[in-house]
Image (cartoon, rainbow, N blue to C red; front, side, top):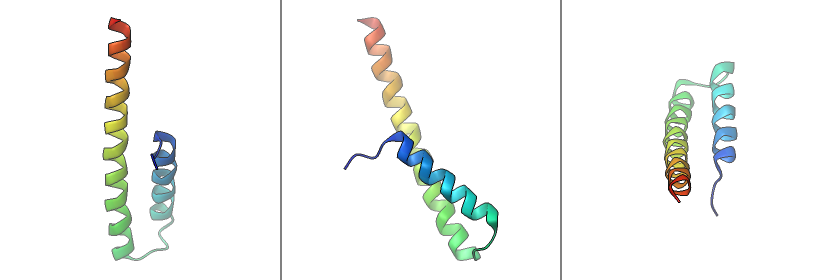
Length: 60
């Protein structure tokens, strides 16, 4: 199953909200922060891929 950019952003927003609420322990905060970092990297890769595709289409 391919995860969309929108799915990644949605999960990232949920993580940020959960951490900001402050109702979780340090270990869970760190785990969520790590997951958030992974999501950001995935989003960046998707955006880079989209930019390359657009550049190729414009050249054609």
